[in-house]
Every structure is written in structure tokens, then in C-alpha cells.
Picture 1: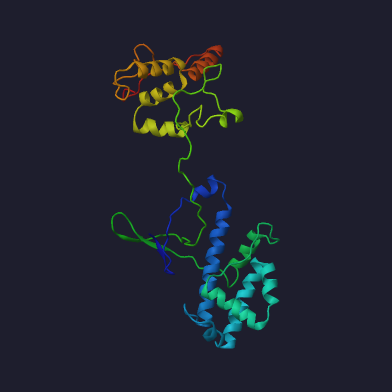
Picture 2 (picture 1 turned 180 degrees about the horizontal axis):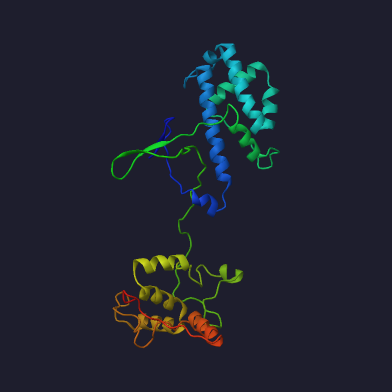
Length: 294
């Protein structure tokens, strides 16, 4: 994984386009602030000469000038990003301020920044970029698939981000035999009463949307996609599938469940409705095979 010139190695690489596509612009602020606080903590340790594992008694006897320099540096940044926290720390006794500084260096520097904070974060960051607190960002180095050590041409920031893992464990019955249809012969969504009346779903979970369909076409062929769509949206196909399973000598091993010479593809209800609207508008959709024969 990439490592920057401060020795920080990335754990996860995220597509930057997702920030805009998902409208998650707050992630940029979080990434910047976390980097700023981490480098500020490094600066405080450099000023005081703090070493991890140092006892409080030993730290308390540190040169008072170094302690004051570190506190002034910290409070100067704190007043910009967290005025309420700055006000709280300024109200502490001198000995409590030293203990507070020790806790930061021994654990981690964090600022209280509620969503309803009165500061304009974008303007504050611009102000920080013109100050002594500006966080360093440089090039990163990584080993590619070729095994060659490579350094990026552009500067890349490596810093903490809060990541929430989504729980994708199935805990309900999602499988159905035949989908519930509405009066047009199209799959009907569940209403609230039906949703809680049965321990199972009357309608399947949609697994093949527009994007998934394009991916499947790219990996298989058009007939496979059309087959899946028809089995989900064609009442005649559904009846024949159930009949074929019930009448089969070995229901778990059926060579061909649907005879497409009798039930042709392209006769599902949504497609019939679409063709009907096109015909009413005065044109007809026809199919032709491409160079690959699909």
C-alpha cells in the first residue's frame, strides 16, 4: 500500500470520484482536519520531546518554556476550529492545562466540532492554509503489480477517515416461488399490511437493474438477460415453470424448464406495454443481430 514521506501507510484506497457522485463532500473536510490534527500532534511531541510511554510525573518536570510553547501552539489552532473547546481549556488552572496536554500526547488530539458550529469551515481551512498550521502533503510511494517501486507525480494526502462497514448478512426470507402480480401482469410491490402479514416475501428482491443488466450482457449474452427478465415478468412463463417443476420426474435436475419454441422471448408484460405505446405513437421496434450474432 502507498506510504507518504511522513511514514504513514494507507489502509484503504478510495475512488475520489465517489465524493462528488455520492455528494459526500463532508469527507473532504474530515480527511483534511484529521490530517491537520495528526500533524499538529506530531509538532507538539517535537516541541516537548515527548516519547510514548512517558509518565505524567516525568512530563510534568519538562522545561516550562517548552510546555508553554506547545500549549500556545495548540491553543492557536484550537481557537480557529473549536472556539468552545478553546474557551474551556483557557478556563483551566495551569497544572490542569499541563495534564490536558499530557493526555493529548499520550492518547490522541481531538477537537470538539459539532455540526451546528458557528465557524465557517471552508473559510477557516483557507485561513489555516496561509498559517503555520498548514498540514504537509507530499508524494506517496507504492509498489505496483509489476513489482517496481513508483512515486506519484501528484501530492496525495494520507489521513484517517471514519469508515462504517455495512451489515450484509441475510436475516429474512428473500426467496419466492412465484412473484405476486398486479392486474396488468406486472410484479406488484408489497404494501405495509402484506409486508408484516407473512414470514416471507410475496415479491422478490430486485437483483437485475439497468446497471446490473449491462454488466451481465458484457459477461454473457443478450439471450441470458432476456431469459431472466422473461421468467420474472411473463405470467405464462411463470405458470409453465411451476407446472414443469411439479410434473418433472426429478425436479432438482431439469434439462430445459422452458421450451422457447412454444413460449418465445419478448412476450413479457412490461415489454408488451412498451411495444403497445410505441405502436400507438406510430413506430415499431425491431431487432437485428450484431456482428457477434447476438
